[in-house]
Length: 294
Length: 311
Image (cartoon, rainbow over all chains, first blue to last red):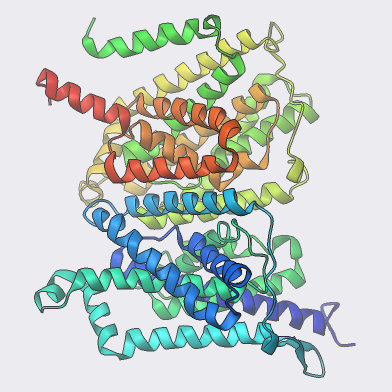
């Protein structure tokens, strides 16, 4: 059997695949964070909790209402996006005039409430969500077996990231969004309804988190705390990529997932700290992040 | 005596008499430890407007080191505390040096991520006991003379340490160094243009805050006799922010008041409502941020100033 550094090749490829799956979640989540931060100037600490709600929406949908995976992919982001719109209207909106730190603190409080409620109802243990029929099994590539569902997660999130990037960079709506990020007051004076744009952006960013949650439901245990440590890793990813950069957040999400997977092969003890170490190194070398401008 | 000094006199008398008022001494000591932690945190958030989201790293690592030195290496109490504080200070220097390169929310996210790194190190390191934590930490004695095993004696020891830290923070804030910190809080670019090396001042404030947080953690380990992973976790970092915010950041007494409220709430509510306690904590967070940004003591001071005509 082929080995690299004494580790069998299929094991390495398997870990890299897992890393790429995690990287897809990082990319989706950091993309949402970057879009929200760009326009609202708010670091959305509730992102992990809303990702968890997305996964739970899929789980509850299946258990209680018999909603299948494909409908969950559509409905869970819509429901969580709606919740995001309510949060923005009722709370975040009133904080734009004060220090941006308050936005971070508010969303931190929101995350505690959301996770607390879900833990109060469902307990701390994980629930499993079945892989949909059409995506069960795996391709035999000769040197390894590629689970279809994992391949689907990577494909789906890369596609979603690409579409979102295209929406922002290539459409009229995206142009408005970018202009409002640059100078909201000027854009408002051109007759564009910026407050609605802001609300919708928050809703969309949060919906991306919920979508990541639905995609994750069959590969991780659905539990109330599934997002609370993930969001910190995603923060590190965003710092590494450079906060304002849409493309930077997608690329660094995927790459860091891979790096994490590779670390699991080479030095497993360091796998859950490698992203933070890289963040510290990047900050020393380039304080504004790899893709950031400042 | 001036009107402003009365709260300190009343609180001082209350603190000295507290063990005789039928309050459980261990609970009182826990309050003091968290009050010290929040006051140390306030030096950063309140006076320099640096929102560190990872202060549990210094609190918890110092608690672990003290516990480890005292339990497994037979160091005496003061040496153990000193060892913990030194580690917290070095950690603060290391993390602070990286974090002060960015401001505002970036600073918050970086301190959060690096504190998570410390959390994972504590989870995996041998000396912390991993998931089990450290247990049976002896309190020892003060210089071999005063036995700290008795709750009342330990209480006065912790109280003395708290008063020391509180006085030190007042001294720092009122010193020329503290004035520069407040200048940075008010307008950082202007402080830079006045020729201050802002990053150095911020790092100094960060390290001071980290070492005092470490002292609070060490004392907590000795008081309760155990250290667990929750002492270095994100939750503890969030709690100290809430204590400071609720009591009033940038006021001397505020963080202590906030600590008393938050710790008491947790103590009494966790029996009543279990997991829902984090919902209540989160809700207080939301209320503080939305409607109550000055905090309790900040509000009282403002009313008082309007009332007396001094502004």
